Image (cartoon, rainbow, N blue to C red):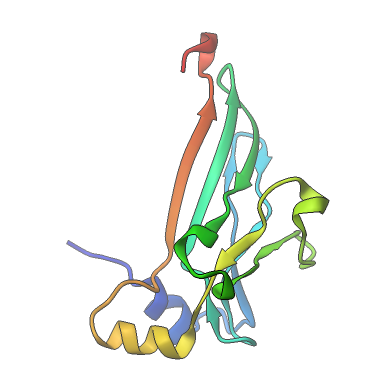
Length: 136
């Protein structure tokens, strides 16, 4: 079985030669805000991302990110949601959770060297609402 190591492929190999790598989700005509997976400037990896797709009668109403801070201590929880221009957003601005947990790049290097996949991207997608005809 082939497994993609996002930490090695994106963070260590740096194929994008970028200061940051962002993730977004889309479905039908809805698009989420951006969540940062890796920030080269601060050397922080945000591996846990959950997109919540809100559906009404089978039509996507919107996509939000959940509060990823359940995966860490509050001291490791930072704002981590951006608009498509690159501006950081707040919960008050966009009416949805904006924070995420980080692991330092140095910690990830050590974890990865030990065989851990803890710093690999973990993107979960869940939905809430109803399908066509109002079915749950």
